[in-house]
Length: 384
Figure 1: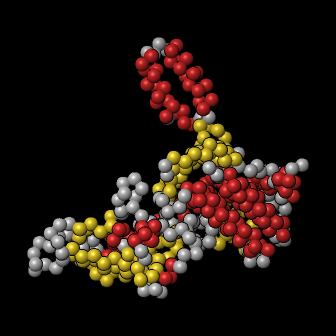
Figure 2: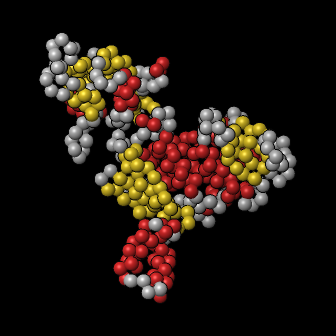
Figure 3: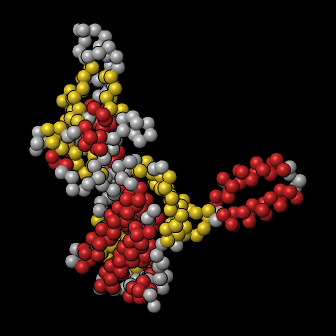
């Protein structure tokens, strides 16, 4: 028996580890196929990439927590619009140990000319509060680089020219501190422009189904031109429903701060850290299980604080496969009662009434260990 099979036997699981195939990167897009796994695993990866990858940001909202001080602004855009634009600007600091508390971004530009002045990230200056000096142009360029293709910088604001000496020139002056955050807290802090998956098309079955349809069209005396048009339409519409079971095609496109492969690996790491935290909470008896108030007999509610569908659905999947299918549980379900709740619930039911949660604690721990192996496999396989 292989080492993986032995460990699966110890963890009481028949769940297979996923396979990552067809890995390809073109320009800024990464594509790959994840098969031999449940949709909840794929969706958990996508949700984590969208909401839980830390990046360096401008903290502008809410007002009391804002780290951006707009000292002067008489442009067309009010302060709140400028803050919103500032939040969306990617900051290319990838070192997790970078001393952000030492850095400030200064913007101090005015237009006393007779032409429009465009303020871009090239005008952003990075200030070191310890040395009381500005970073060099080379260092600034690594933090706010130009676009790789257009060589342009991100437009932030426009300063209109003076139309009279009696009218003050437009002037913008901003001091901003940096902080790490995730797009789960603010959608402007995302690290990808594209992150999506869909079921893998079964090409062989697709061709087989089209041939049957084509034969019917020929028998109905449909012209070759009409058949050709119908074929194109069928393959991009109805034919897309012919899919492989438990196989998903991913596409990920970075905003440019992190490499695509790093983003996938970091997402797997984030998920595994959350699962390890649950295991530790169970071991330290800091985990909440309540008797369910539902009408389901012998039901218990597993409370997941500060977690939602991402972690809840993947744990539900393992509990279902390993315990519900063999009769150890009579019910497994996930619920988040209200979007604003800071907790979610996995509801399970046993065949017989029990007041001892020891068995349920072990089920949770073993499920988390299995999921850790799944995401470790994904992380290890996602190599170009």
